[in-house]
Image (cartoon, rainbow, N blue to C red):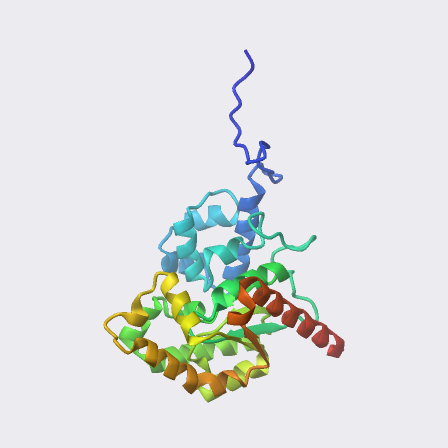
Length: 291
């Protein structure tokens, strides 16, 4: 009788590809991205453990590629790092592959690598389009709101409830200044109201290529609701009217962006293509100007 096969198999019937230490490469890739992201945010293991609600020992094992993690727990860790589980996995062996030769901390980090900032109201597609474009480019994907929440050590909802809008705006400016000082590259999704703070918006336009993800008010509404967020219409009979008014009030500010991508007209795939093209062209221009 042949020996019983005990190794795990992929859908193609082959054992998962393992690294030198025998761990699946997907875990090694994920561990490297987690370590890179934590380092970029200057967080210690203890600080990240407290923000994500996990143990330091678990993080050590995860960063070394020796621990598996549930999607729910990875999402907790991703939020603590100002990003998402999907973005952390995007350049690994799940989904789109990173460019050949890519290693954590190297992608897009050469001369001229730009920071591309996505603007727009909630439901513009900043997280979805930004995450997919970053994966295509092999660069970091950041969410400014996530960085603010990680800096405050609490959710945005708790931050606004306890400290108010002025405190949020202060942390937003400080996080953006930190990104500018570090000459960060990649794609960053910004909060919908950032453009209403003139000093913050000016700083953003100085350190990043800005892209307005434009959509109709109806599409903004539909996307947010499809994400399971009923807040736009909860106990607000005139919610859609208010959304249209907000769109019109901010439109002139969003139009100051370097580029506009009409996501309602283009759809998801072509919008991602357009953001990727903008980032690549910006990178080439910056490289040409570099000494």
